[in-house]
Length: 133
Image (cartoon, rainbow, N blue to C red; front, side, top):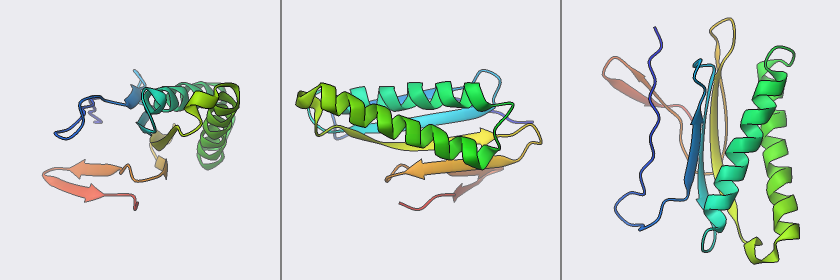
């Protein structure tokens, strides 16, 4: 049985939270993005990344192999952020980290990440770091 929950917190240092996330209601995939760069720009980048990745995963879920789907989704998010930067020069310094975990129809887990956000796995009482910064 797979159990999951989604939440985000600004931590003890920052007053604002530039994180965005999405947990698929069916438990197929999970996305977390931690924005960075200027006032509100990080929040924009993380939200944009999550939205684009979610759309790509939904569109390709039944037809594209998981590794390729993850790669295409992250590339699409990057392109969307670059396009937004060109159209909105005041957000030229925005960016985001991304972590995506996907559980395919055969119950295999796949992941992709960019930056220093980490993916952990909890099994019983053991927490395992699954990605490297």
